[in-house]
Length: 257
Length: 218
Image 1 (tube, rainbow over the protein chains, first blue to last red):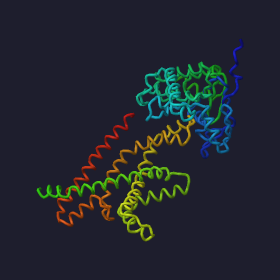
Image 2 (cartoon, rainbow over the protein chains, first blue to last red):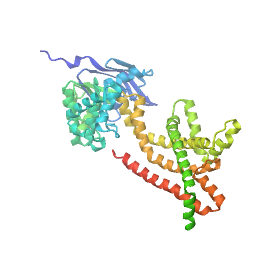
Image 3 (cartoon, each protein chain N blue to C red):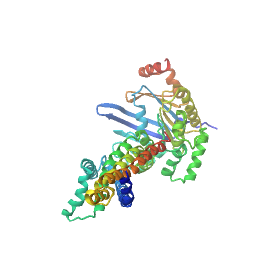
Image 4 (cartoon, each protein chain N blue to C red):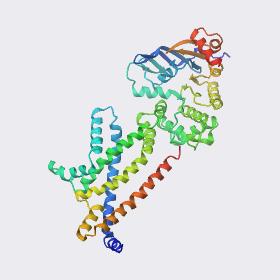
């Protein structure tokens, strides 16, 4: 049997010529990126490089000035105002996990995960709860179902947020510095869940400062600086032998601290 | 002291009827004013210009003009424009306006303190703007605004005493008419004041309790 080559899998995410500026402050210049099905792409780079902005443009939380975004066949052109139906479909295909979790604090953990399923997918409450419990068990958090998020640790809240996104059956998961707000020790439990997710073949884009995760789990590493992609390729190779001087400086700063 | 007890026994039922009118005026004004306040809370920041200007007009006038002026305007002023309302209806209209204006600002404050990250979270999940308001923003915004809304309700209850000026037979006007026919002003106003306090003070306790209940998840 031939191992399927993930590098040539059908692209789930395609970002073309993305650009964005706030007045004269250019945050993204001509960013193009393709994420094949079943692959994990890690985006690294100094803060202010535009990594999070690229990720947030992918599901239009941030409106790019120009360029095109396509997720799972739903295409949105930045110049025009997106059609709400198409935008909803695109967002449904992409699950997003934020640095600060963004759970709904007035709902129990179970409601947090079930409500979007009911509203977005039209599932019945029973169906939604069943799916939620299945995911909570997978995250090792079944006993937290009836608690409020504030009663959970940061790592638990982030795993709940992952479960909430997964419950909608996304084609790709977008992670925006998922461990940056967590203690290193707690971050590990989130990284474990992400590794498990990657091993099941979930397509993932991860903006991160966790170099070990980027090196060991990612299939593709994207290095950004000053609003553009300066280097991308096989993670091992980039981490061992960066081609760009800016990459070298960045890696020295994060690896030798 | 005996005098006080005598007046209480003799005129208690009349004053009590007045209290019931005060309470129903309060509840009616809240029932109409709060939903309107929620609408104006969104109106004052709406993109739609007509909606925004209308909301700003009602909120600013409602907060800017004293309740007494609004009451007189509705009762004595509107007949000049061929709109004649009963005293109760005009008082209700005026206090509804006041309630809507004040509660709009309180609710807007509550809504604006809902963290934007939660709104982003619901957008990223593909939830519609309406669902985001309905399930995330409004419940939390109202919860944050609730203690101050309850405080406002107590003030409104006390402000219903102004309706005596437009001949609504509420507690203040009953007390006044008993006083003017018997000259027992002192005892009758003491009793009226105690009746207002008997509602206002427990209502204040209730708002403290509600605040505690609603922040259980924090």
